[in-house]
Image 1 (tube, rainbow, N blue to C red):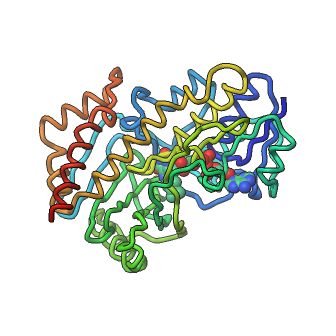
Image 2: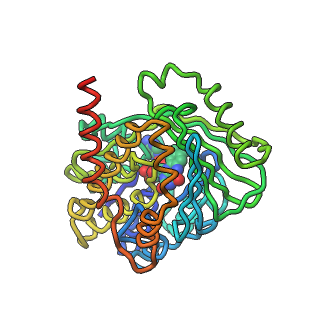
Length: 374
Ligand SMILES: Cc1cc2nc3c(=O)[nH]c(=O)nc-3n(C[C@H](O)[C@H](O)[C@H](O)COP(=O)(O)OP(=O)(O)OC[C@H]3O[C@@H](n4cnc5c(N)ncnc54)[C@H](O)[C@@H]3O)c2cc1C
């Protein structure tokens, strides 16, 4: 059986590992020079969003024999709004490195793959379809799925980030929701060592936002982060991504083509997490090819999760700084604390996002009715 994987990233490599575990040797095509050939970037997975799985690394290890080492566990997430600061404490998730770093997740995955990877590949999808029995589309975006008329784009984002030097505790991450500076977007700081972190802003490309000057936005945010964290960060590297797609495919498989990773729709529009779902789609596609499950069935919870996350995105976009302040202020009240502690507790499989979605949906429709009446 001949299987081609287009893209040696999170989903493509997870797919390759799983195929190999079941006796298949895929042909892997990577357009870049090497695995992880992009800027170094700290990313995170928050288990609170992956329920019923409460430790994604252990889950991958125990269920799929895929081994990843995080940089650290996240024990505290500090959330800043315009005038308030709150925090979530507990077993929140993990931080990890991506890109050109020897410990990046891509590099860790590629060490578990035995099949050769063809780098600098210019192989086209149509050509792979002719030569292989199965094609796994894992290029990290929805462009192929769009071209095949199999993708709904819900929004695109502009992302600007930097590696900064400073003093960090690797188990504490920060997120900012400050619409005066980043309208309808957010920013984060994730450390990947005690001396280095990524500072990033991301916002949806709505007409009002496209008109804004990203340099002004970045400078304002950079100075705010320095002030609030009481540090003078030195920028050592920068990146910018334009029109980063968030959307989902209509059909996860068409004939013998599987859409995986961001080409499936693994990136959640609410807060931009996509790594864990990307790996799951790669694994599930391999399981289908090996006769161990049906891809369409296996990815059903990921469709639900995407749609719930889209409801969260619309909710966040409907807020203003006053409402964000109110929410962050109330993170520390007893009821919210108990709910978060319960969700984060080791044995809980309470699906916070899924259970909150109907409430958020009601708020969203009430809010949009109010807006249309104005
Ligand atoms: C700035 C930023 C921050 C993020 N932060 C987080 C986070 O904190 N937590 C989280 O969970 N997720 C995060 N994400 C999302 C997460 O990185 C993605 O969802 C995940 O990497 C998707 O995996 P993938 O396999 O689809 O794509 P990738 O891992 O990007 O892999 C795609 C691979 O395909 C290759 N490729 C592209 N086109 C071709 C082609 N034509 N032929 C061959 N190869 C090709 C690429 O070079 C790349 O190696 C972030 C994304 C960005 C951009």
